[in-house]
Image (cartoon, rainbow, N blue to C red):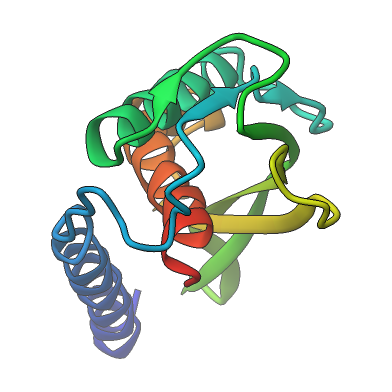
Length: 180
């Protein structure tokens, strides 16, 4: 391998690590307690199990995402979690995409090889305000998580699961309660 190729590979690795550190440093900083965007009349929320209908299913993602979203809503709003059909806010979700693509390539002995993979997770959500006459609010959140091409998807999942759940939960929560 030439020195130039080594330098390019090292640069890409440092760049990927710097991006990952920057993204992680921005997560979890904001706290939302008794957010003003929740109408006073809304007291309860039901978070239904987030189903996984992606072509590839990570069996841990749905239950962990559902539980973390419930915890975040109860801990950071004044809403009470319920399983009742007449909850004021009814939240349903489906994981629709869970796919891996190659995002980084290096050249070794004149041949291109993957150096970085990206796992993309997409969740489609529906929020119904049972107290209003407005139609349900549908929205989609999607996050990508990079990992080295030398890892299998199963190895990457074990290290990325907590980040996936935390980032997707934050994205869903912010969309519902902060209009982000």
